[in-house]
Length: 190
Image (tube, rainbow, N blue to C red):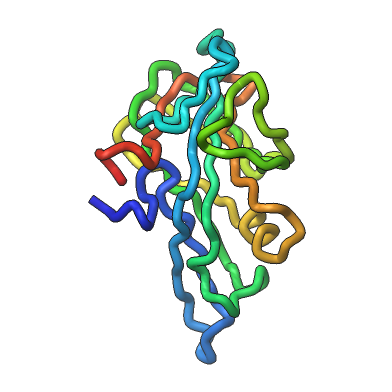
């Protein structure tokens, strides 16, 4: 079991390979701490899910219920001298707990501020551009980790061109999805 500090639960480790900090141009890795996660549910517009042990993602045609997951990381664990140009790759690692409807999700940048204790479907944060589209999730992915490239978003957060409001996982409108991922509150993979 990995430490909560490294947030290997849901969106477990945001790993940035920092290549140009060392004279030999050796790659190094740093993990960022998951500081907030939650999900919203269209059927419960005022409910807050910030303490839930899963992050649910669902949408048509696999489910009439629309659930979006939100995650945010603290990048202060990256070396202070690291710039956006030093980040060769950043990935989001998520643990798939259950899949009741195969499909895919989009990873979108979150364009407005939100807090884990107050986010709900009635007043969700604004979603920005897609970081990754149509990330596939099948029933066979249950009880496994998925890795998604989020390099562009992390670079934009690091250089200050984009506020670090985190990322959202949204069921893809074309093929839907009904899946659960571990949150940082889960005792299983945190």
